[in-house]
Structures are given as C-alpha cells and as structure tokens.
Length: 510
Image (cartoon, rainbow, N blue to C red):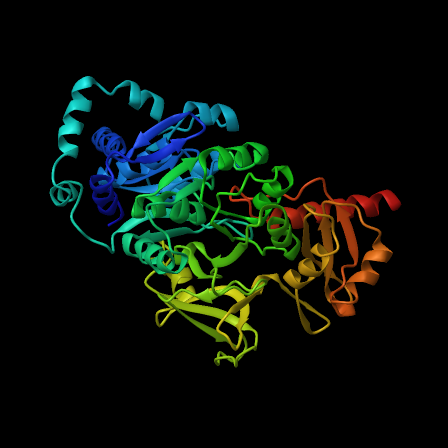
C-alpha cells in the first residue's frame, strides 16, 4: 500500500530531505515527515471514517495531509481549488457522500472561496498539536516499519487509495476510484524505464487533485526516497526557473502550456541540472521541443495517460524517442487499436480507438456502474482516444474521438488542425480548434488563437498540410485560452467563448 511504502522509505532515508517547500521556505526530512503524518493521522481520526476531502495547494503540507488521511484510515478525495473551489467542494461532498474537507484559510483567501460546512483548517489542526503529541508520534515513528504499517491499516492493495475527478473539460466530472495497486503498478511501470532513483530531485508543481501531479509529484518521490521541491503556483514561470537553478532539480514534469512559460521566462543555464523532462496532458508542439533543446539542451520527452489509468500509458524514453509520438507503452501496459466502427483490431499504422489493459486501470467510477461498464469491457479500458501504433511500437495520438468532427461525411481531427496551426504561430502562442454547427455540412471548424493572424495568409499556409474540408472557417483572437487547474486547455469553455464572440460579431454586423 502507498502509505506503507512511505513508512518503509522514511525508515530507510530518515535524515534525508523529503520536502523542500519553496512556498513556505520549510525543509522536512523523511523522519520528520513520518512524525507529522502520524500526528495528522491521530488528529484526523476524530472525523468520520471513510472519505475525507483534501483541498490544498501543492506543498509539503498537502502531501502530509494525504499521508495522514491514509494512515488514519480515511480515503482522500482530492478537490480542485483552481476553478470554482466552492462549487467543486460541494460537488465532491454530494458525489462521495462525506462532510470533512481539510483545507487552508490562506488558500480560501487566495482563491476567494467561501467557507463550506465541513471544512477543517490545517492551521487550526497544527495549533492544536501539543508537546505530548509530538513525543508520542516520535516514539511511534521508531517502531519497526512492518509493525507501524499494521497499525495504520490492514494490507489490502485493492483498497481505494484516492478519489480523483475527471477534468470536466467536456462534461460533468466523474469520480475515479484508484486503488493502491493501480498507482504503485503505474509507478513501477515507468520508474525502471526512466531510471528513477533516490538521487533525483523532483520539481513538484502540479496540483495533487490532478492524476499527473498526484502520481508523479507526490507518490513517485515518496516511493523512491527522492527529495520533492514543492511550489504552489506553476504559473510563476520566472520563479519556477529560479527554483530549478537554485535547488539543482533533476526532474520536471508538466503540461505544454507550463513548459512554454518556463522556456520564455527562463535564462540560459536555469535548467542545466535537469536530466529528465516529461510533457503530458496535451500535445507537445515541435517548436516547444526545439526551443528547450536550443536554449537549455534539454529534451522534452512526451508521454500519454489518463486519469483512469493512474495515469501513464506510454512515454518516450531517452534511448527510444520519436518526437511527435507519445512513446511506447509501458511494459506493464497492453495496448490494442480497435476500429471504431467494426470493433476489429486495426493494422499497424491504421488509426482507431486506443484500448488498454493493465493493473493501473481504475477500479471504476464511484456509484456509476453504467459508465464503468461502458468504458471497461473484458478487462480492456476504452480511453476514448484515437491513434495508431507504428512498425516500431510507438503510439501516435490523434486526439479524443470526441475531438473528431464529421464534415461532409468525412472525419476530421481537431488535433491535426491545431498541429498545423501551432507550427505557424509565434513561440508561446496557443490555439484551439473547436466544432460549431453548420447548416450545410453539419459542422464547421473555428480556430481560437492567442495571436492575431491574417486569415487569408494563414489559410494559404495551412492548405499545405490540411485538406480544404479541415481548414478553419474563422479565426477568433483570445487574450488567453481558458485552462483547467492542471494546465490543460478547457475545450468546453473555449467552445462557448468562441460561440458567444461569433454571435456578438454577427449581431454587430446586422
């Protein structure tokens, strides 16, 4: 179990730094992290067992709260505080039927969230810690790891380790149940191939309410005995670059939108210590990869995953890297490409639905047997994504099936449109292709861009890569594209913004 693994790691690396928290300027060794987790586990036991909400920014405190919840025999429910914190907190309480949410007053003030009934503030918990609590926890922390693990709950790797919510970029979020086995299997699957070990320093900037952050930034370092360098705001690009330089970080994972910020706001040499950089959640543009190599000599390795798969499905590796692909499947993951109409397996190079089978596939959606059964059949999880496998075993991701548009009877990939468009935009500029209804052809494509373009010139350039049917009919300039807390583009909100702007444009002309 994940917290049992942490107990073993803490016993092995007691004096080593587990966390360097650059938000609070605190340093926490593994020994102190274990003591703090034991204290929090005891404090959390006063609340009803079962699910417990955690709504905290990426920090040592957030990691310790997750550990304390598990060691106190609670199941953490991670809550998105970046967009609609109050709404998300209340939604999580209703969906998972619990009351207690561990959070922070400072966070509520920063995101302007009203206090929700059931919220318990970590500041109050820490103030209630007595000298006796500390002494008792310190004594308990010295027990043999096996005994301490037994005291923190019986061994059951199939027990639910966390509830995460899908991004909601397309529709209402679903509550994903990930077990201890799911997450530990995933970590084991990519750790060997990426050569991870206790000597690494992980930059932990991704939110723990997103599976990418939870697995890579929280559990992976604790699994291996690494040092996590935490910072709460991944959007402070210049500050992040400074932290990487000062703390000699060796590993960084993030989304393309974050990496663009780091590239543009960094100085040469800021990322000299980086030995591993992985981009995920959205497609990594060629210009971004080229920019990091030119400025920092760092190769961005693109990976692919999903909340329901804990998350990593595939990744490029240093000795097996095809830029543009999302890499080879992990050895712990089986992949099938299935024709979306016939259900038959596709040939090499033929695009179809991506299905996977692995111990990292979720237990299911909470209280949603129907949706679970639609996504997992005969042990195979339907990712809802389209792609193909080439002759060398690399997966080429072509976008979600929902991001394919039928125009005049033909299927057009919105991701392909974005790829072609991003090559012709300045560094750091972003784009998103959206589908809108069309009376003649059923649908039309409109491109939202963060840099104004000349429509005629851009269409002429795009025609080199795209068929006429895939060319955007309009280009809408936005100051920035709406994002989820993870840094992923919010397609639903972007589509609605484009729809409203076009409606306003038509009204003004009329």
